Length: 393
Image (tube, rainbow, N blue to C red):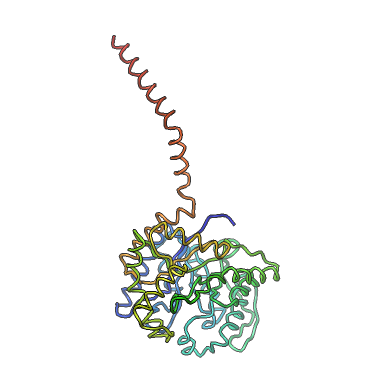
């Protein structure tokens, strides 16, 4: 794969409880408009139904609203939890969104991440992966225009077909979410669709000294590659997405100051207080875990050069990937978050997109020839002045 990279925003979204939820949705739609204006490539929005912090129950509805407010950015479900939906309805909604976005839609799917959602919907967590596989197999067939008859213990289809064909020839992209297990990567490889991996646990290190598991990312890609080869598909690293939090500020010190209090609140109130993650509440221990997570690359935070270096390091660890999705965390507050999006788009992304290469080459060329150009210019000016003086005489 080449050095070119795409960038996007991945919004669960997660917001601390206390703010008006309607205004939070409006803020998130504002982020979609800003991302489009700043030339981000993709926006991903998740599906959650409980816990108070995760506020979007239907990413499809959110993306339909975002589509009317944006022009070019691709819009993705990040992710649609397949065990919660009849696969025909999931495929039909995806086909409609493809048209509403005029070909800018990406169907991101996964098994679901909240045990509380599964409890409410009577989905056994032990069956979630099987349901995801059965659903995605069916969705792929439907979106290819096939007629499907299938019966499982949780859905039935008889002579089912999707009325809409894709907006663009060849259909729209399907991407499977993957965490630490090889399930998602193998499923993506076998079905010939793409993959999105969470590069590190969203809570970071439980305590300093623990591994984030990022050294296993290259192994994750290996699972997809092997499954694709067995199924006769070609695996392409440029389609692989990684997501993790990114925050850019004027300096590394400012970046850490921007996000630490929000990170600590999320750690204590969301991961430990709401989901019961076994995390100590010591301020000293938390600070050490925070700094260790950043040092290990589980959070990218700093000035422009810090972030550029961290992305290069991530590419080295993985062996290469095509798109980095910034997991939007609401740690820094709206003003500093928007500032981070802006700094990243203006100064970090160009280093991987090559958008300033021509300008740099032109500047270097002019600088290398400056003496020659200046000598010729001065000679021409001297000659012009002499000619003017002669004509006046």
